[in-house]
Length: 90
Image 1 (cartoon, one colour):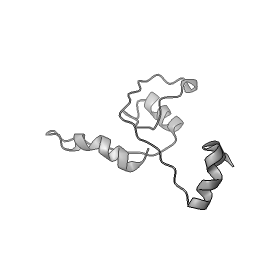
Image 2 (cartoon, helix red, strand yellow; image 1 turned 180 degrees about the vertical axis):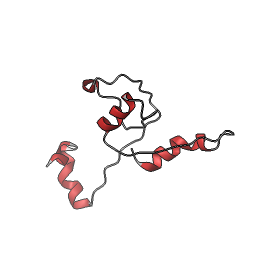
Image 3 (tube, one colour; image 1 turned 45 degrees about the vertical axis):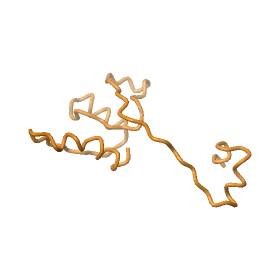
Image 4 (cartoon, helix red, strand yellow; image 1 turned 30 degrees about the horizontal axis):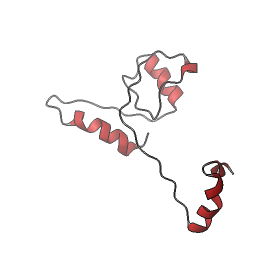
């Protein structure tokens, strides 16, 4: 999750009348979910839901969505038009 998006999600809590203390960590989703399962974390902000195969019980809440843009120099864009987006795999 980009830090700029995480900041925007947390910003309203930073202006509450009663102060809130944040400790932010970065790690792989599986490591963070392990810490969540052990009650070492209260919340994870991630770019996707909890993977079912990990067997971690938790709740997912969609907090927002964003688009994705692909940009390329004209010569490169011409080579990708016919098979886009599959041409990006090369």
